[in-house]
Length: 203
Image 1 (cartoon, rainbow, N blue to C red):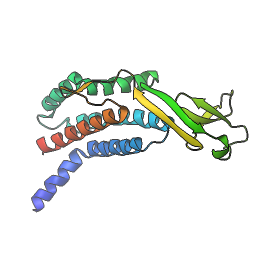
Image 2: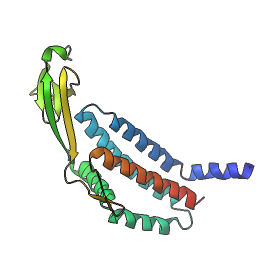
Image 3: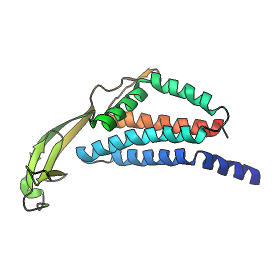
Image 4: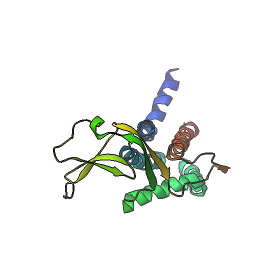
């Protein structure tokens, strides 16, 4: 029993950073699912892309000195390269990180909206603006310090968020849905399986 406990602790120490990054990614995904505006959603989506990559970095670093790990991971790398969804995740992160571009598309549908129901202005100069990704307060408009604050009340409006050129397959099967939440959920699930398989295989 004592030896078993020691072995489990050793496994956790060996892949501790990978587990930590996996927990970060899960947390980001949970916040993404409950996001109420496009600005926050985009930020969390990009964070998840980076966080999922951090898992594989940590796994490679921690497994580097383990006998047989590199051969196993090369097979996993080949699997990820061939997978349309995982290749999309990699390319989307590269575009965001190196070019600052976002691969999400947005549109807003306003059923009704009353400025009197929005609440007080965040600053005296704030103005209300309608954009393709939602309704916002604009502060310091027309200056280098201009910024937006999402508006989440005052009426009924829906912001639709989609992926430009989304993947259509994962693990050799066609995707029934390819919205951002579904794509991220499948990515997180794959990363979980990757870490868990490493722990099980090299325990």
